[in-house]
Image (cartoon, rainbow, N blue to C red):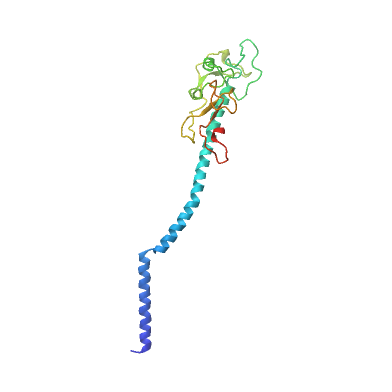
Length: 215
């Protein structure tokens, strides 16, 4: 056998051997070094993403808190608008002229004065948060702001101002700190006369640096 032929056969055999080795490596999967590098990269990515996920989750909870506070405060304001010009309003009289001012957004007048007079509450805000959910007796308001329907001050029709008391996303409870319109701005407890404002019971700090209880 000539020397050139031997060289060719040797080259072919070496090539086949290299292919078999490469095939075995491919079937064997990643090497240990490759696995270590992959895990290291994944760990770095995870450490970078997790703070962003936590911040995004916290921002969503803060948005739900703002929506809950806005919903309850709007219901309180709506309730108080429906008191103005009605029999439960301070200095109301059935013989004098109608109240000179009433909010045109109000279409009814609250007539259940007994519920509003159970405590010292001359400004006639709701006496408890549940009153907005339970509803209160009302009568239609006339075009000049006084009571319509023949001037009747007794009605069994109830208006619901709040579908339900929202859950505080920061405490996971449907419990809120209350403030009356007679409490000081920095009061740490509720005076109990009425419900003028609501706040979160959480003392945690928001992303903007404020306390949730101050919102």
